[in-house]
Length: 324
Image 1 (cartoon, rainbow, N blue to C red):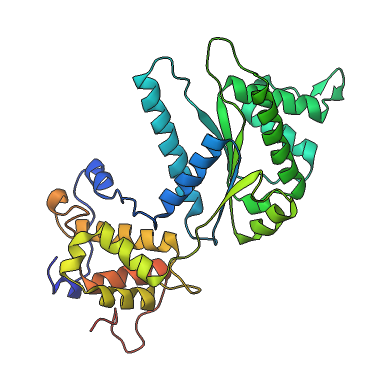
Image 2 (cartoon, helix red, strand yellow; image 1 turned 90 degrees about the vertical axis):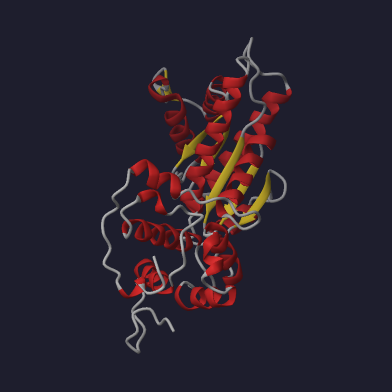
């Protein structure tokens, strides 16, 4: 895509193999800045320490997507370890897309149904099981399945009774682990960690539990990026852009087109990068002509993509991208 190609933004369908496109769209981690890396750190903390970790970020910043990737990353790591060592017991996490139970017993029942499946029976001898019995049954199931952490998205929906339940599960699992609860012949998990991912409204309920910095031992903020951080990430994702645009100029475009509520949302930045790359690929018949590393800079295309992602109108002066 040459310097003048931005005058012609008629975009063709991608002609290459889907596998090629997916491979080229892989976006690397950027140390200290990348959302995926921060969520992975939180998940690793919950799995390793068997305590609570909390990730807080504004709506639309990409937390849920990063969480799904972190879980997939952990599953892949555990699979590889198991392949290298037949005696290794693969660790698992249980993903809960939303945990909105308002009452303690209700929350226990929901988790038991999810983890035990059809083998779970909420009542015994005509009456419902007591909370102590349900907790024990749930923790035994986690032990047998080697579930080492609960991963809960939309954490802002967790009620105070739900937070108390999660605290009790961590405490009781820790006690059982300390007293040698294990399955004979296999090395099993000791304790149960919890990762909560939610919006900033989650902070106050966590503080109200009086367990912050104790049972909930890690808090990571993943709010919007500063302009200079967004600039660094884009230049890391597309290193060939350095030959086509000055860093200050790119920062100016980001500030003009992508800033929202004082910063750049993670998801917006990723959507811009992926859509920009797709358009570059669609405008060239040879799918392998450009990879992420060789994708060139085009200011008009960048602004065109930013307008689509942000639904932002064209420049009031009539310039489609405001490019000078």
